[in-house]
Image (tube, rainbow, N blue to C red; front, top):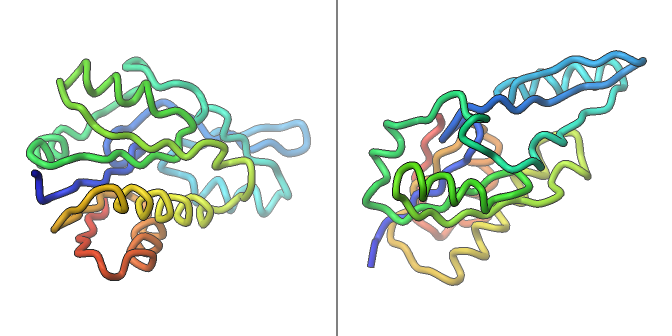
Length: 170
């Protein structure tokens, strides 16, 4: 039995992708990269605009990935790994890493996450709920959570205060 679980966010933590967040207003549009999500929220708010996250629902392919965090992959090779992603589809992520790195990760994809709210609070809430459910099935002494969003890290810690969790912001 492995004592450690590595919980990893997909976009902007494990990989950088070509995925865009698109803001629409007054017959115009502006694209943002995934690491500019807070800028997209602010931009949309100031213009009373709509945010389109439809690219997150598409299956991920090797061609969509600009960069892979190889140092993180080498760190977690001996751990059980759970990829917790706000993407709507997780099977292609699982298959990609199995094929490319010979790694078998569990993947939880938060389906329909972007239909509800403009801000990232729903994502953080859902990630913490899904991790809580996952941990009911398995027991670990140590959990390392790797994420680029502090709101996700704080929400997980708040939902699981009794668990020995170490957070790593990427």
